[in-house]
Length: 381
Image (tube, rainbow, N blue to C red; front, side, top):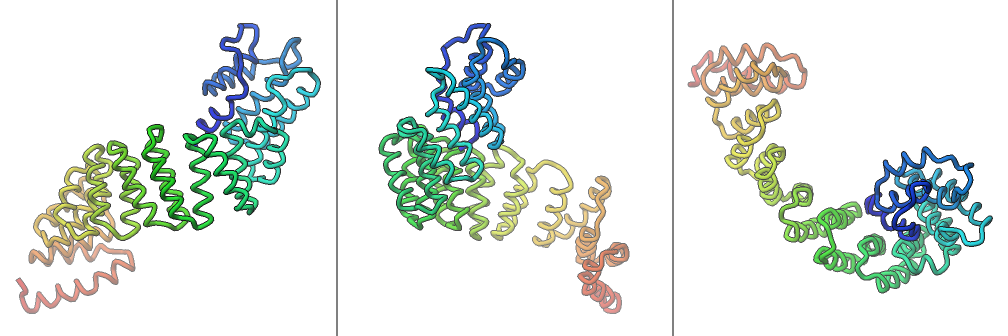
């Protein structure tokens, strides 16, 4: 879950007035946080003098704590929430309530990878935790992190029963099911979520990649395929699907996905060409290389493809283009030398070989040098 989406979920309980008066900067900052305007909220908070009369220190510190969570600084967030809790103890009807602050604190503990402390904070949150998606998600994840997998499963089932459309609870459940090696349940849950109208392409991709992280590459691949069908115009999920295909040694499938991506954005053309090369579809690889943006990477790839295709005349014609781009390295010299040799241009081939300095490439070129010497003794072409 993204940090922004997460904080949208946890600011629900702040419930500031619909419109804060101009003389209430704390209320204004709270509204800005609730609406996701973090930078504007930050500028308002910086200007607040907490010693000024009438300042709601509970809301001020709670809002500052939420901003610290957005900045992924759980230590600072916890300090802010403690200050909010202390301030709440000094007033009759604090806003937000101490239970809400405890829920915020639980999230901060989870961000700090302190699941036991998160569970303690949830206990202080009471029914407030049960009435929020965040409470169930933190409880499920915290129980999983402490190794209480059976209790985590019970929490996950209860939370999803109460909030069946909550994507964050689906993600928590999938993580738990994968850890418990209940892959079929995890896959089925993911597929159901991908088809849900509220699911986004990013969420579908994120869910599938959780299987990859767990080593279930085939499951991840098929889930990404389902994601591509659900979101055919999203390049990120298509490229992720292609990457899994290549990782699973399915270059033809990966190449097709990358070609579709490249037709929308040529930045993927080089990758598509390489995938087709791995699949043995050299002419298709050359086509994808042709539509790629001009540059050294394209030219290097093109030389390699032409050599594999034994298009030696076209390969050696690239020498002038390399020179114009100022591209000089020994691997290119060796490739061009081989192309010249195969076209009977042994003198030019030898000139290029004599410029090689890299020991590895030099060793690689020994066979070609011997072939040139033999052809001089007995013409080969």
